[in-house]
Image (cartoon, rainbow, N blue to C red):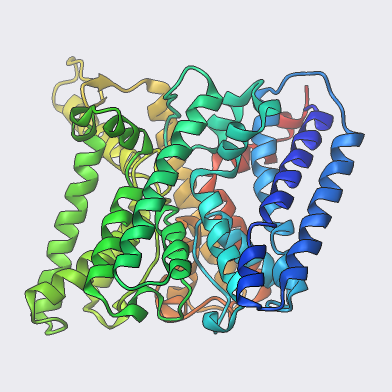
Length: 481
């Protein structure tokens, strides 16, 4: 492990964070919320610490896989710690643990919050919450690859470690060009949604913040009642559409912009993803109708489709308290928490591709029991899946369930009840936001004990970086030559 090179890159990331902390300043000055100094001081601290680290740590060696994993994991951790400074300095969140929880939730696009009165927060801090979502959505490290030439050498190690999904596909030969293409698509979709939300009556500020949270599949809103506060079918429809788009592999969006629409709809994972949304929405609608929750077809479709899209994409926005829905619909939503969006999207969860390949692998194993001499491969689309990829998926599934169980036990040990413990862990591990029980859609995480919050912070990080990137650091052999 080349610690000097690792620290130098972390220092450069702190400089980048310091620069982004100046972005909320215009909002603070425009709204005269009185917290502009918190952002200036935070930015100066980040730039000062980052500059000192870069000056003290120089290494001519190139970035290897080990340093890549370390930079990504510690990079997200550093961002969560230093990104919490504005909350602390402005006095909005006096507890350091709570401030780090809120910031980690933002950068990992989880959307779980400890804030009870969101609308009382100064506008510039509300914008900072949304901005942490947007930066974390496509990935801080991918953004850094696009704008920091010094990370160009060995950059694929960082890209593989950060990009969610079973594989990391390049769109361009050079990794910087790939990162720029991804961010270009991301910026375009964010801009379009912002304009559409403004047509629905949102202010520019609210539209921008909600677009940041939607495309990042984060879920931080500027209102206590989330998107439901606007009570607009048009806004619900726009947000539902863009949540679904955010859960799609961004490489497919890029293909559409290139005019290759056939490649978009030719993705088997996309078809399964859309199929799950349609079937889940239909089932939820049926039970909501049968239990007289919503009698009108349009109203039922509006609320059911929004919540299904919000949960499977791990966005976490809310327009209704689904804990008042029939138990079977709540169960369906919990199952969707484990599924998540497509590989290569900003969504969390286990990803549709992994779930699909797990079922295909099980099908092949059953087929071999009946036809032991037959040769049948697991395929995604028309392409056979490498054994290494399948082994990675099986290992990921086992680790995901193990972390979920272990995290639930630890949160329960902190004093929470059975249902809330499991719901809180899957909400954070899947980067979803709201759960059920005492952490439901109209509740928050402020009441979670310190031990529980610490566990959930780790779950957010592990879920966003998909377990392996974080867990590999706990092997002693990782640090040895």
